[in-house]
Image 1 (cartoon, rainbow over the protein chains, first blue to last red):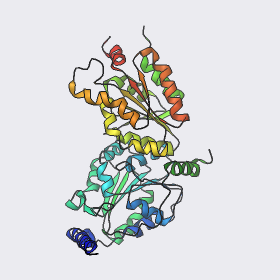
Image 2 (cartoon, rainbow over the protein chains, first blue to last red):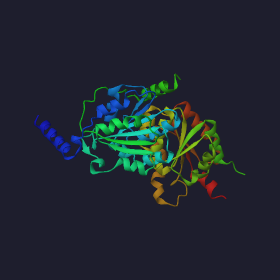
Image 3 (cartoon, rainbow over the protein chains, first blue to last red):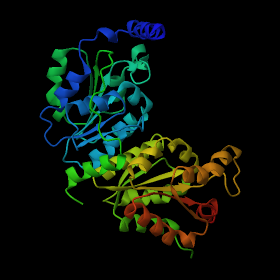
Image 4 (cartoon, rainbow over the protein chains, first blue to last red):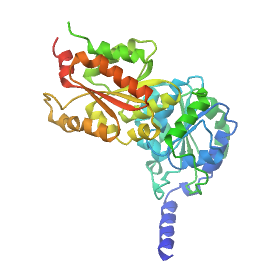
Length: 213
Length: 171
């Protein structure tokens, strides 16, 4: 018990050092709002909390939740967006996952798929490993990087008003489009999990998109 | 006139309706990249690092397009963790690897990854096909493509320096 209390104190210490403990936007609400009325949108979720957030809304067959492949979410969205140019593709991932694959911004910027949107739920933390600060806590500006890489639009969001105003664009603005949504650093109960079996995830996605094989 | 091994590769890619051609370039792939660039139904996707190609082509397959990943042997080392995506989900993944550090290599910095390339790919559950004779390219590519897309499986065709040399230095 004493050890647990020490760990909790240490964790709170980490949380207190950054600004994100006080950010008003909450990840579960933000992701739920993005996935409400999703229509025929295709979703790739980066590993960790974005997977739990998306699955908390619905374990939807047109979600592809990544249990690994860190750094691969955005460029997986690119491959999907180029293969399905008439469908909106939304990548929802975390700041740590995006930072591991920053080169993907350049690869996407060079291809300029107009149906691809990337949203980073940015809590400035590695949430699955003890809430250590990521580079965005130190001021690394992901939307500025996306703009410099050639995205059609990119913006940071930190308030509820900004988020509500951006929602239609997240669903439909010409891509490639990028948002970093500053969300509160918090650990939610994981709750519902999608299947872990990769073949199941792949097969159900393709069946929902393409019809029975 | 020798069999043009680049033509042999291109023709297999076209037969299998490969649409996304992802690459980090190598001199040995330059003719193939030009051929694919000229094809209306193929899209070239230059990458910043080879592992992007694994995830890109997984996304392409989710959206019902086939792809191929071109890289040189040093790039195989960059792919190791991302290869788990292809393995766990059984995404079809066709890789064309031009070898360095293998056969008369002049640059010792290429040797470690060149020697590790087949071992790393086999350890990652890839099928590995080696081509050291340009005349074998067509049938090897066809075999690899069939096992990749009909498996599905991940497969790498290693293009030996003896082949690339026959192309690049023989003119």
